[in-house]
Amino acid sequence: MKILKIGGSIITEKRKDVFEKANEDAIEELCEAIARKPENLILIHGAGSFGHPYVEKFRLREEKNVYGVSLTHLACSRLNGLICQTLSKFGVSPLPIHPITFFKKIGSLQCDLDFILKAVDEGFLPVIHGDMIFCDGKFEVLSGDDIAIHLAEKLSIDRLGFATDVEGILIDGKLVKKLDYSSIEKIGEAEGKSDVTGGMKGKVNKIFSMKKRCEVYIFKGDKESVARFLNGEVVGTQVIL
Image (cartoon, rainbow, N blue to C red; front, side, top):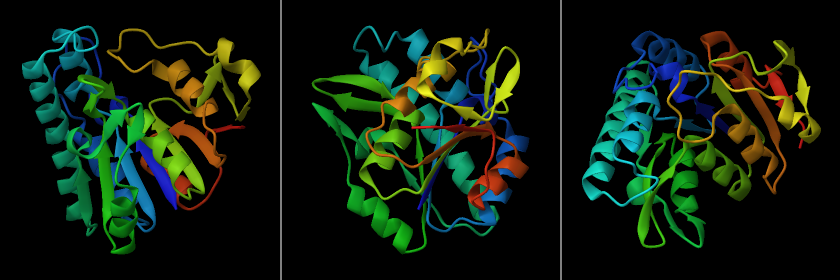
């Protein structure tokens, strides 16, 4: 089984103070690529401008604001709906899963893993997104990266792919084909983007925190690269766990 996580910076315009601007051309192309090989796949996508600006506006990392949580979730759901509708246009059977009602965190992150496995067995493509969740008496952000890593650790996953807006991990402007833990501090961050989930360095740190090993790739989120990942090919940067 494979997990593909598509970054919010690909499917939305992820700039500061930009709210709910989808990149519909990219969504169309990626959904077309996924439709060629949707079997045994879990799809996760980031929230991009449908999530991060709301979290910042309502200071949801610093304080409890139920109204802000509600607006954030509704926006994330709209993006999820757009992606699911596009997938269905290409003959895929998407099953939207909204973390605010599916995941909870009481000490550790929990969800109904059997439901996801059953959905895949039945021929559905689970489509999960970054969202707000209830956590130990308060609400917090659950990123698409966190969801991908949690499921990769709990399920029998062969390949985990992170489709991003860059070719892979770049150090000094050059693509790194294989990345090990010793190179983390050399990774830079893009400027001018709204991201409340840690950016590329945060993503890589989360990957290296995984307790279960599988093939992990970070690569350009275009139609060709996504198709190659789903076909079992080497793409972008392989993270060596």
